[in-house]
Length: 335
Image (cartoon, rainbow, N blue to C red; front, side, top):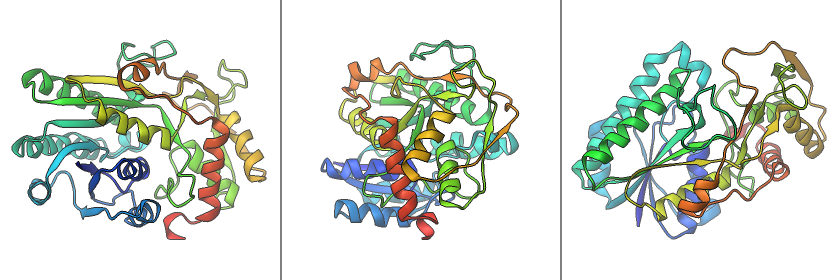
């Protein structure tokens, strides 16, 4: 089967392509490379031995999408493409609404015009209310508190409305928690542009010597060591969750959390990274950031029941794979 993967050159997208190809699927990728590298797709081919049909295009470009659908017999779409930095979204909200929402609407219009109604959508735990109690279930209260999260929440409603209006649509909304790690080969991993927004790539750059210290925002939370607790999930587990969703499309619009159900603190991650890398990893305690939660982790039971998916990898494995990627690619894909 031929699957279109939008944003396929990115961190989660590239790992998902590996799982799709190993499962026997043909993959077509569209990515504008605004926060990714085409090199990742060359590395994917090294891992799987299979070529990827790649189009450098924007999902807001209806003509480009129409051409891609016309050239391939696409049956399903996995949609990752979108701007994704929480802090940046508050600085340039119009770019986030234009890219994430308008781009997705354009994609949906082109899909429908070509008779393609199966979609796996990349959503986020940021759609949950900060007042929701952990562990977070799919029925926990929703209330995104930043433009990035609001784009995901708005699109979830759009997709639910679309599926309710036309029973040909089969849609999975996958709410991610905190993806980290890398492919065990060390060939593909997370390589954000500029200063990383997420914890583990920041820790990795400190460990490899590209950054002097790790800022830790708050050490006075009501958690075991005072630092924030999050549900970190191996990117390979997350990628396999997309494959499972695609293989179990069901009907209408459905939602599942993709998380481990286990919370780890910032200092848990730092400690594991120190042990694996042997690096000192200097830490600088900073004031809390507005909007940060003390604790956030998933109840992943529904994913096990509905798509037969469970996370397999523990924090140690996530950190080992992240460090292997970093050691082998100290400058990322620019190495």
